[in-house]
Length: 206
Image 1 (cartoon, one colour):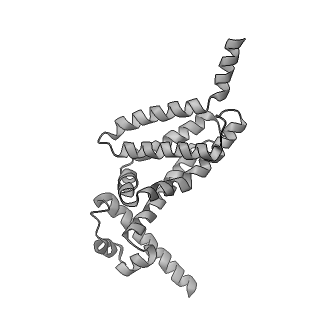
Image 2: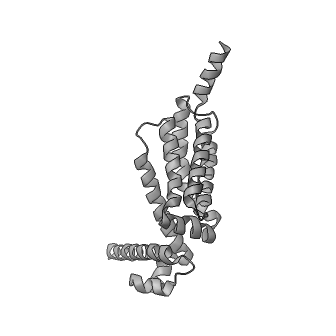
Image 3: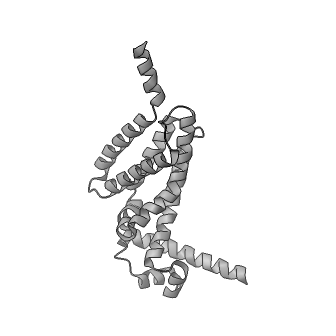
């Protein structure tokens, strides 16, 4: 019986998430009526509050779902071996999410407006650890600037989400994406070419 209840709850949650994702994208968070959303999902409003606590809680769940999907796409783009080029390419791929109409609307526009700092916390939860691991591996190779890997990961992740929010807030997202991508590439290239810079300096000294 307990397993049946858990299964029913999971099915209800899945229906609510799928329906909310559609409505939040098509109508925006403010334009989405919980009564209409629940009717479309075929569940009661009580079921929504039981599973997600509130409309804001439902939005956060949708954002977490999208954030996980973005993370999966980044993993697909990353190579098995960490090197400066693949690291930079993966970071740049994150900015492409701001060009996706659904991600832009739900995560970077409504997410920021409704959740505020909580949106940044959610992003950090899923992003800092993979960045730290990659940075530590690059540091072992002598291909990244020295420093605390966690601090560097937090700083780089902060730059990435701020750039994505900046892109999503523009009328011309493509133009801002181009500018932000160029700036991020330049910044990461500077941080990840320590060995080549030192080699150039050594050559001049000789």
